[in-house]
Image 1: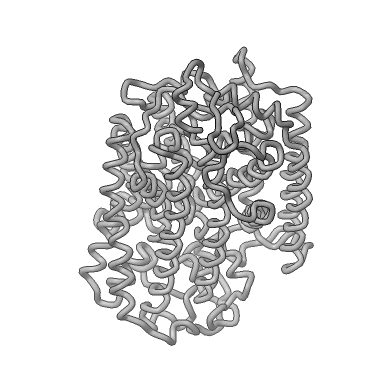
Image 2: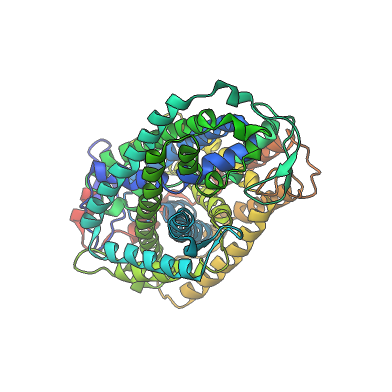
Length: 575
């Protein structure tokens, strides 16, 4: 138990066991930034222009603002509850075990997928130097490439094994490189500006490089596919995926010094830095492209070097061989750093699931260095599983983005419920306009889920069933499992309605996932009617969840269960 100096109210605070607070402000910022600046900056600028033309710049702005709003919500919750694997635990506090299982599982699912994604990016770019590791025709690593991917994953595990302090130093060193290279590329490419590229292209049918299928170039010009192409690019081209990772500071919150001050600064600061870099990379990718490549507009790019490594290929295409070489080196370093920190994140989310008592307590064990070593090893082994059914960068990205947005969706619900049920709880960072921003964040998350496309949603539906089954079996053998009584069922009553409702809207909507002209679902809900339909449905669910949240005494009991027995010092440290 601890007492707030500002309110005088005695409250319980969750405190983690065995972890060490060794990460400072810069380390926390770089933990989030390393996750944001990964393979996305190497690929998404190409895919976005293929889907939206030069209007891709709007997609980056929309995606940046949307994810920043979600980041503000996580900043308040992270400062309130600086615990490991925070995204898996915030909904657990306010809605109990029934709803918490889903959010916990999706927190784990999105984290465990990322390291394989980044390894694939290394193989993709590495094909330029070592053709035997990647098959560009099929867009998948070869057998040798898969073997090297396993080795990369193993090195992530080894670095993590030496403790969070050493990991933070290694990641910070990598991050300075990862930040410098995009900035150098932006500055150099700005001197290759072609104003005509912003309206390049004519109509026609051309092969879509991301899918290999025939694709109409629409009307040509700045936005060949109109507003629909822009919105499709937000998720389908990997833009939201590129912004993912701001929550890494939350996932490592149990190991961050002075988390009440550090977490909000780290989360918001990393997101702002990443947004500026990504938008500028997209600007120079459009403006610096050789106009001769744009006879059919940006979807018609056919240069194989650009398609296999967009930014480096562009630099080579316009005669900047030194920059192309530098970028191809960064294509190893940048995804490697992101994969490294995401394996850390996966192990901390797994640790958090054990603290929620969703998985066996063995996953909460730590060694003398404060490393949850069982969770770390399991994160490595289970990450290898995702190398099998999702053989391409884009196929894993689609699933990861959907899982991430479902994970983010729990935060605005938890924040608003806590504002209502426990207004006196100390809040080191208090997000302004919470009653406006929180429902807006939930609407944004719902739209991102819808824009992910029906294909991603039905796959996520299967994952929900798998997740509930695995965690349910695990909890059945835990005598101290979370309470799953009437109050918990009522608190989660909105969740199946939301999942089924979003599935039905998506099935009747306009987005299938992938390229703009992939076969659509039924398409019964017209474009521009679908967006307010999703928003209206989200508002109804948000209000339902707001009133369905657990009562104050139940929330306090759940939080109290995760306070360390007899660890008053740990509780006071996070008060």
